[in-house]
Length: 308
Image 1 (cartoon, rainbow, N blue to C red):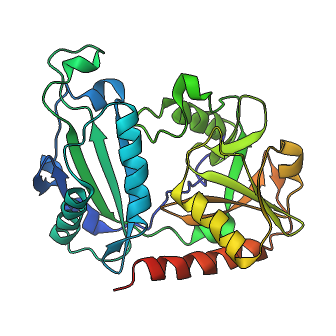
Image 2: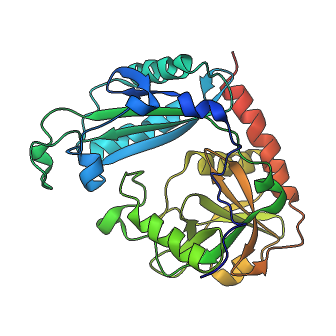
């Protein structure tokens, strides 16, 4: 087995002892994390039957809240989960949870909606008769600085992101086994995380984040047909267009990825995280001028979106 003692992931955060005593929202109640529980009959626990969103708190405001809610409500509607709360009510619940933890900055939220508790331990959605389960976990969370100094090591894995008629990758669902398997395969190959291909063999996404490369000043990412429609992914594409950086959503293979000048990941937690290597091959020279420019633009966009 490979040595993973020095591995890290895009979600590695600085240790913060305050997280040992955070308060968590569970179906309207805010309780100490040790008391935050859901039923073993919950459809999320039994089947992975639910949707979630990850959001960050800046200056007391949730960045790009509307975009995250659009994705969440669209996903829940698509699988016939009635959240039972309006977007404004969910925002109030998230704000209550952050306030209960005295958080205004460097905080990350995982908002989870499941189909709720079941009457019997079987698959049929009609057995979830008691309304949805809503959980809000907000942690003090600041990405480790080492992520940007060393970058992420990726390994291409056999596990692929599937077709929309099997399980559409656009669902940010509780059912993440596909991605967990990919992550395990990458770790067993001695890498930090997995680079996943699409069903046609083109470069797609990682097990946790969206994936970009930079070639000759151009930014490339996948077509988006087989990956999570990431909020940060779309913001980066939009920022490229606004700043005059050529950007393409296209099919490309590992050949182009290996020969890229830069590669980076996007996600709500880490924003933009550099990729150091793919399958043991170093990416570029270590200079990340385009990514650095996009980081500046993204930080400015966040400030604008969360201004007082």
